[in-house]
Image (cartoon, rainbow, N blue to C red; front, side, top):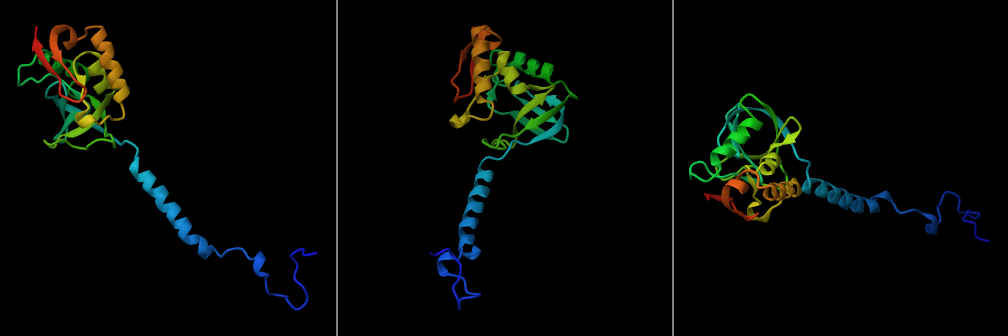
Length: 192
């Protein structure tokens, strides 16, 4: 019977069929596994937040924070002030009401989306007193979701639910203006 013990004259020499593979032979596989895990961790980073203080509101979807940074509320679009769109002033006032000058906010970057726009503005979700202002502006009818290039960020579902609610209730621009909106394009509003 072969019980794996060594016979006479073989002391100190392991039997070849009982030798475990060397850890050196497993090292390349281990390194590949580590590289895959690191790669996965880098493709889905956690969102980052930074504190800021509101200096002024530019319009319904843009604000300035102390330190000179300009922030574009990401994934939404409000009627344009400079183009005289319907509900533009009201959108600006709603953002001022939610985040007046001096308000401490949290700016949240979305790792799925661009960090800055073509004008150098930070693209961020803005949180104040436990509310996502991007979603609140859409819920109040002061802005609409805008998924530029079809890219949906972290709060896409909440933004879409908020716009459905605002449209059904005729809130804000939905009750005051003729609105042309498609989720992949900027909103356009005209007087009725």
